[in-house]
Picture 1 (tube, rainbow, N blue to C red):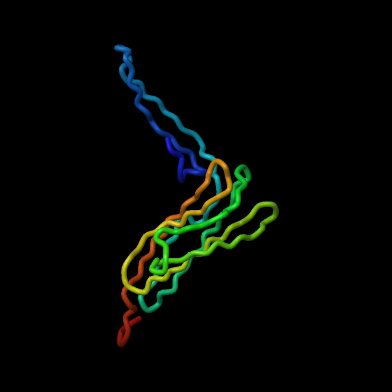
Picture 2: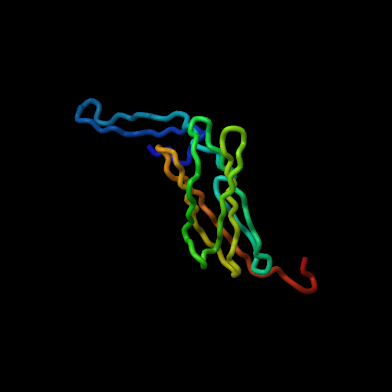
Length: 151
């Protein structure tokens, strides 16, 4: 059972086990429990909304390592990447008492109408969790209405 994305919550899954015992061909098992959070990420995904004429949109994701899983973010990358990417990001690190607090700033670059999707990958120095990911969704609307009767 994958616990990816369930940190800080409880999960439960039913599993069917098939046996060669004629009296018990199928046994149902339930497994579950609390999932320890590796880090706090607020918000969990990035949503950028703007219009063609007012294209500036950005969002900040705050990432705080849990007390049980201290780590540093050592690199970032995004898909899609390059000069034609619809968004860009930068990582800022603050020191909050003993553990770091990261601010991932994501900015829209798309200047035309439409939507886009992407992912930002954060490489950590933790031996058990080498990478975190944050999904990005952007929507650029048509230009704002102009002229008489426009709000």
